[in-house]
Amino acid sequence: MGESKNAGLFLVYDLILLISFIGLIIMAFNFVSYLLIGELALIFILLLLSFIAIVGVYAGAKWSHGLLFMVFAIILVDLLFMYYKLRAINAISFITFLVSIIGFIMAIASIKREEEFGEFEPVPEEAEEVEPSSTVYTPGKYVASKTASNYHAPKCDWAKKIKKSNQVWFDNEKEAKEKGYKPHSCLE
View 1 (cartoon, rainbow, N blue to C red):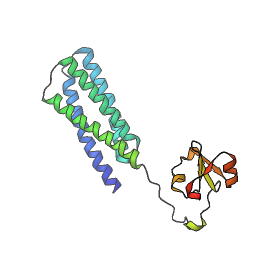
View 2: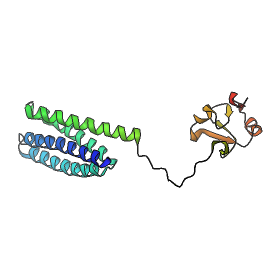
View 3: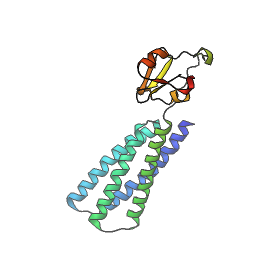
View 4: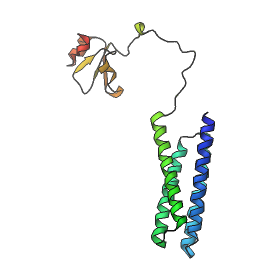
């Protein structure tokens, strides 16, 4: 199913990029001399970057949507530059701008989706499940936060909220009290 999703996204991005580049090329030929050469050089570079990004989308690479985001951002900036220089809006420039915005939004949405869901690593089948009654909490029996004044049992809901970087572990209650921590109500 992942392959067909990548293939579908690949085709949509292809169509959006095709329309964007056709519009850019048509609009570039409204310039003369060095502006025309500069626009064509930029379009060539964007075509290369787009090709790399599209191959990445098809392969399911995480970086590909970031590269497409950059390509669409450059296209939109270039379209604004062309509008500034030509001072004309026609059907081609409007459609190119609209399609490029759609591609830009799609790239952002894909990046956000990857950040939200990420890659899930499969659980190895040979891993044995540990019974909850035999759970061993390491590196100690009690945990506290560097930024708080209470210590907790590791199974306490409050203990589970402590960031790993802020955790302070103790082997016994005496050690926790010596460090200035008080027992939380989950221990009473």
